[in-house]
Image (cartoon, rainbow, N blue to C red):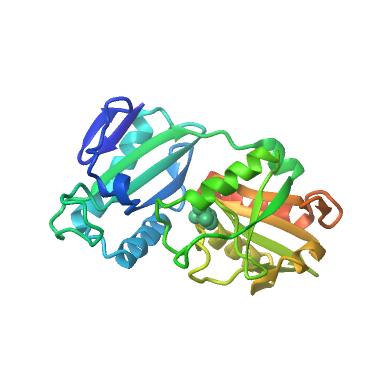
Length: 283
Ligand SMILES: Cc1ncc(COP(=O)(O)O)c(C=O)c1O
């Protein structure tokens, strides 16, 4: 497995960062996960635009030259790691770099960022996509800048651990009585043929897959309502689903043991799954 780190390619075992890297010490960095389908990077530019927004939000210096190099690096890793056929993912992480002394405030803007890119094979969970998942809810204990895709993921890690402990398939996070999103995906619900999802806000990450859902909904004349759904109301939805780069569109068939709709994946989820698959296979 070859990875890219700060301008060079290494085997994954060899690649290492200094202990004073601010990503390690402070979680001071951002990341992206991009889907690779038959060697093509799905919606790469949308991911890079979100990365730009994140870096702007964190005032992380990154030159145009450095940014312009990323697609070529990713394409080389896809080829070198033999991902031209089948499914894979690209992981991109950029931190504010290695700096001393260890002080919280940002170091000099000349500090070179740490840029890591990795490519891995990926196996979608076909069973949960077909049958749907039994989701649980947890309190959304994250900060108020969830719109930035930072590497500070402990609340997400804890939510995932809860899902694992309880053998669940999906987690819905609740803030102030409303479902915000999952720990690695956005949440949609269908009420009387209308798709509802949390509006763009500092409380959610606006997913690239969420945008694909909007696109398919528009093409298929499915109305979309950008509005928070309360934890109580969502139990009355006809359908609920999670969307994300490594989630695809995963139907939710129960929440905290309460059946959603008919208790199996509904027509809107299936239609959206087909639309996403078609785009991933052809773009
Ligand atoms: C918290 C959170 N929300 C939503 C998403 C979905 O975003 P995307 O569709 O761009 O993968 C992710 C993806 O990792 C996420 O971590």
